[in-house]
Image (cartoon, rainbow, N blue to C red; front, side, top):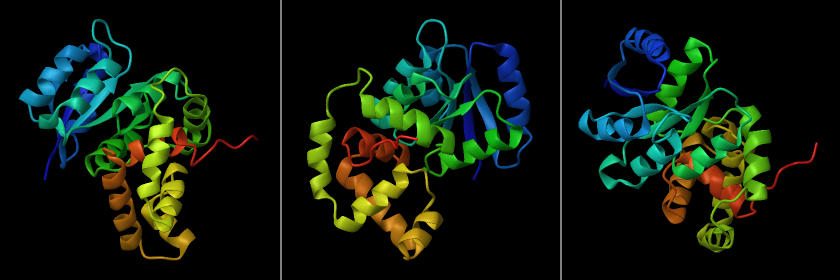
Length: 226
């Protein structure tokens, strides 16, 4: 199955470079290009995109607003957004996760990282690097940074989770893969996947990235002071 990719960035040269790279892969293709957020939302639907590489800062409607619209549209529930940012340690990155993005990637990433990010997002997994998970996400989500004050509500929703599901959620928030979690908890990867899916259903999470947001905002996981 070919992964349909939408490129959303106001820099034409960057889009061209990404397009050549993506189209060089047998399992993916660029189906559309957008220069602003409004166009990205329109094309995501019109071109049936699977993954959107979305620049955070664009003229007109920015990537954050566009991601919120995509995430809120039931017709686009299958679309995964990977935010592109110049700097990984950026408050906008956390806002993008809250907006519904599956993760983010620095514009200076290596070609293999970019292609891997597209495949990870298309598979429904969270694209969260160790640097982001240990520093950025913990810092800004724990501080609240102006987001909606729903941490208490989400904390109550955690009551629906079993003890094992909470354990798995903590591991997911640490940026660990199913295989890594399985090894840590001494269970099978399939069992971990089942717990992750059940946690997502109970918490109303779109994907693993949203589980990370909920884990920090609810206070289940707190940043380490190093």
